Image 1 (cartoon, helix red, strand yellow):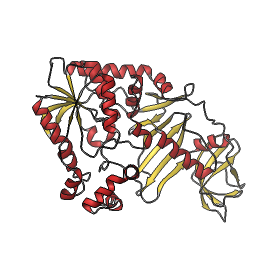
Image 2 (spheres, rainbow, N blue to C red; image 1 turned 90 degrees about the vertical axis):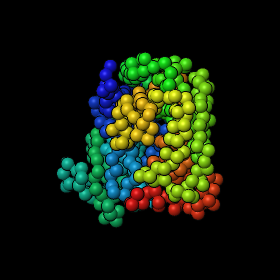
Image 3 (tube, one colour; image 1 turned 120 degrees about the horizontal axis):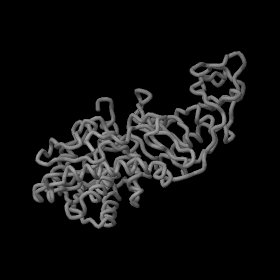
Image 4 (cartoon, rainbow, N blue to C red; image 1 turned 60 degrees about the vertical axis):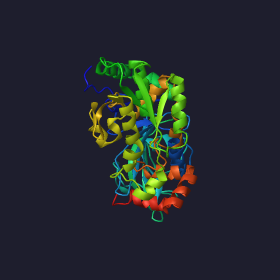
Length: 431
């Protein structure tokens, strides 16, 4: 197959029988990355729904799809579109200083109505087409921000504008009758997408074999312990075998706790012996002398990661490196060719077997090969790099601070920077 074959097209529908998302089925367009929610994300959505509608809709034992959505407001730092039980539930939004909030859909309203959630009726005289309109309701709405509207055969969801005057604004409407489907897990998602998964794997393996068919040595796989690099590692092993690849892991000195241990465990399971390299520098001392890294000045990547890799490539005569970069991760990675050069290490050709895969397809491939996903994904992290990374979303940095207080205490001792200083510096409007 050619290098321009895109198998994961970015469309998703729902397999009601398996209660699982199905790729390349044209219902919902996924313009950005999408994946199966971890426990943190499921609990977050559960808690937001419970807080707004005073009812428990259990998501932890079912498949929930997350799509990285455009920010709904200028204050948004992150927005995630949520799907479950064959329904688009709405968008959860993170604003720094305000934390998370939910923008529910009519589909969620229908599901909650079937579970017995409280609803009110609209006063007569407002007509039939209510979406986007302000209406007056009959019923108690004191203390509520969102309310369900009983519209005969339909159910609406509305934002409370003035509780004393019982004025609400209708945001969305859906037919009544949506109900939670039987709970299932990721194995059912694998089954729902088995044919596409096999096609994607065959294409990636074929791509690696063809690209490197005349190369017997000088091939490295850059492995970080994240899902993308795990998928690329396993694909490389399937395509090239053990003997032709050298696996390199960079210990930056500030990896999230558990990442290195996971990586070594997976490598042991696969029968691969890694080369663990490091800059030998103390990251805290480097921050003290260089300042905090930012998205525009990621000196940490150059100094703590790329320099050790460059030395390793030189010492082992590496000419090709396979890594897990994907187009859906960012606009810059979307522009990265599938076979090309890293400008910072131009002497080595970089090969990207999963360039056009979604994170969902990556998850399915890893699970299908009998490999556990990194447990940190269940804790709310989407990037499994460093304890402090300028590419983190603010809520991930808050999570990192909560789980790694000792490191941030040392950061303050060495640099004088508190977590609030770090948040303001990395996520202020100037950055």
